[in-house]
Image (cartoon, rainbow, N blue to C red; front, side, top):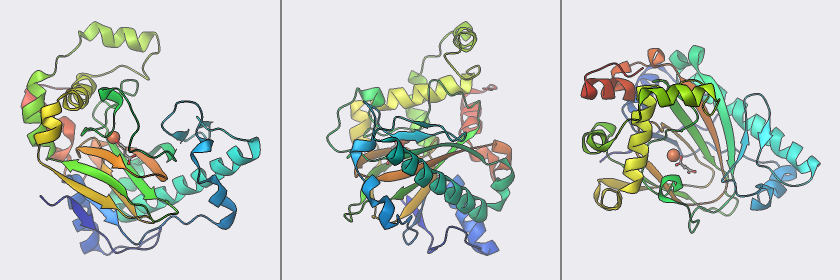
Length: 291
Ligand code: SIN
Ligand code: FE
């Protein structure tokens, strides 16, 4: 199983030729993880002190920065939190430039969503199965309906001690859905409207959102699937960058510390091969419209 597609680029504003653009988009939309082993996000000396889990507030997994510039779940003195916000803003800008340069056809509809800083070691953290990202899953969030839009995420390993981030990458989306979809139970339609009306969700959840969340939960809850499904361990070296559609790629983060992550949302219509979007795969399997 070929899970990675490597690109030998070391700039955040690359100028890929047409051949590389084509290969990269085919790999990305086809469910591979794009690895840029030579693209680091270096921190100047003045920011090195921010490499510590002490800047993570409360029980949160990540510090997060909204596209509106609001930082959440950070801890520390005002000055340090402001420095962290600056660092994350810079990362968000560079990530946006990179994705727009590698995939010019996405640029117009690429929506910058949350940025996160993940300073805690993953290995050894204890969570309930559904919150446990060391279990293989596709990303789907209960409060953030996507109605078919894509979730594209870009990660940079900024570990100062040379420690890689270790993932497991699972089987193709279609294979996973064949196994898990028959078990997914949909909530009654009315519940989605009630959740939206009381503002528990940002907008109304579509059948697509229910099925995706069902796939996320059922895969994580299935110990046999976690153990026996086709999978490969992947190591993302310190000072490398990678990206994938996390709503399609089955992934689990097993170990590592200090990562920056940028989430983008993308319209299916911007894709080179829209038939590979999970919504189109699931609509075909379900035989009905899902959003
Ligand atoms: C995830 O998206 O499940 C976690 C990825 C990571 O933090 O490396
Ligand atoms: Fe995930």
